[in-house]
Structures are given as C-alpha cells and as structure tokens.
Length: 116
Image (cartoon, rainbow, N blue to C red):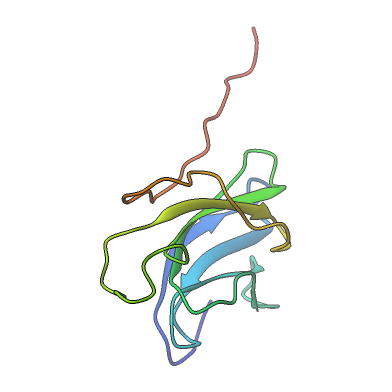
C-alpha cells in the first residue's frame, strides 16, 4: 500500500476498516500518517521534530492514541523518554495524556464487551 523512500511501520486498521494509521519516517523522523484502505490519500497527522509512533484507534474510530518523544530532553535526543498522546482521527487536538517522567509507549484502547 505504500511506496516511498522511508520506512513505514506500526499499521493499525480503523475499527470500520476504511482507514489505516501508521508510522513513517519518510519526512526525516517518525510521524503518524493515515490513508484509505486502498492506499490512497496518504496524509500526515503529526508534524514535529520528535518521533511519533505506535498509533492505536479508539473503538469508535474518532480518536488515535500514539507514543511521542516530543516532550523529551531537547539536549539529549537519545534520552529514553516518551509520552502517550491522543488526537482526533483528523490529527487535531493532540494532547499528552500520560504526562510523567519515563517511557510511556505502545498505547492500546480497552474494549468493553457488549452487554448480554
């Protein structure tokens, strides 16, 4: 589905199967992208100087959680620090939800089984 000069990783299907979120370093560092299920309309949801990876869709498909190193020590790019962020499925409203020292990564949404 992707043919670019960078690496593409961490694919995550939207709950309805219409889109695929993924991480790519095609722009020089890792960012979160989304595309249609057929590979069309590939677009960046995150754009910053730090690595963003490991997208995970919310069960209702309205949000994407991801790991980001944007709050790490800018003087030490190798520092092992990461935070969990959440954003709307269109990339807006990117918010740090873990906000603590250390390494927080690989988010996953809990799924509540149907009643009955």
